[in-house]
Image 1: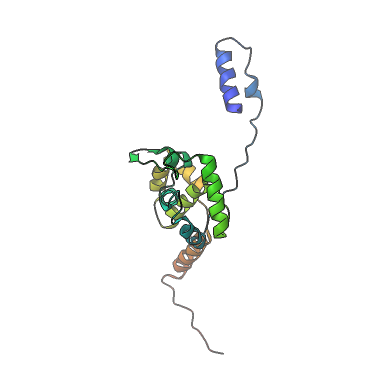
Image 2: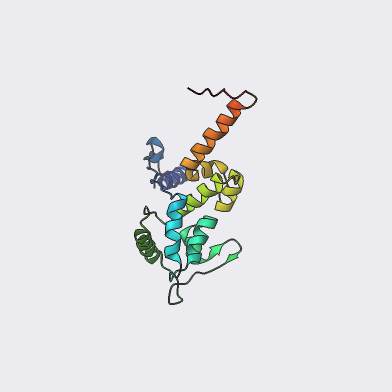
Length: 185
């Protein structure tokens, strides 16, 4: 809201409608980032079987994870050249509220950490980056103009990434050096 008021008052000031832009004299409020949660592979593997035979279909969940598409992109069937509409059990549109309720129910039955549907987007980006997809490619797939935004918002350091980093650092420190002798006590 601050940025909208700031822009409106700046325009009004430029047109001579107000003497000064009061919004320029105050700091914008800080907006806390929502806590992002993702699943580990074992959580996804516990969840996926619950979607088999589901009236929304396994395709919806696979699509969300494989592409990182937003809920609105999946439900509205609008995403670049993808021609897809996922119907509800009666052939009509899936309403976001119903998807949220259904997703929560499936997650509860699976015994996994409850995620927002949008967290699947974060999970998709994390999986892509963990498996070596370049940040530039991940950013493009998510529709971001900046790799910085992708890194800052969607890159989550997982236990797998920490272990991989430790292994790579260990290899770099030990390359070309003789291995320490192991002595038996």
